[in-house]
Amino acid sequence: MQIKNSQNRYGIVAIWLHWLMAILIIGLLALGLYMVGVPLSHWKLKLYGWHKEFGMLVLLLLLLRLAWRLGNIIPLLPETIPRWQKRAARVVHWLFYGFMIALPVSGWLITSAAGLPVSFFGLFVLPNLVSPSENRLLLFTEVHEWLSYALIATLCLHILAALKHHFIDRDDTLKKIL
Image (cartoon, rainbow, N blue to C red; front, side, top):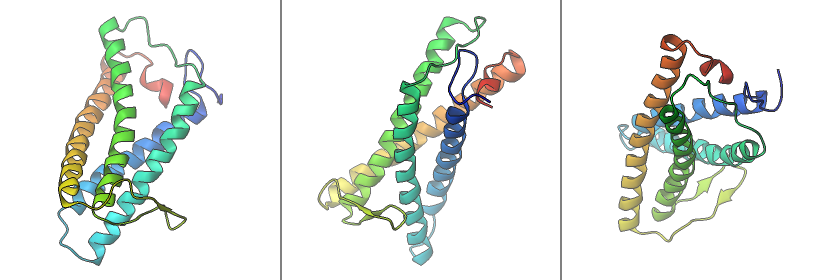
């Protein structure tokens, strides 16, 4: 397997980053949906801690992924795909990059507005981005929640499109990232 991307296929680094981040993001979405319903307890605080730490890991991996993407070519989409679908695919991918920035940052803002620290797996503590404020806390919480719902919708669209290409169109779009 090649390390770098080619015109026909993603390289192993891009593939690993894609699937690692997919697992982390889907896990964070599931954890986020679960933890908000847990009664206030030591367990809930532990869940929030993990959610923040893994959210910051996504932000860190995003920097690596962006650097890798900018330094590599992007495999070509099959000629049989209509132009509007090619544009839609690019828009969805850039939306994902936006979500991978906005969600961790909005979570970091929530924690900062609550006056709490964001630890990165106990290795270091990130600085607060804003001073504590109940109004900011409510605003950033609302933004984080709606961004999460938008990410879920975009993720479902992405998965459905990949499955359509694989099972209905029978092209190699999905195979390029497997």
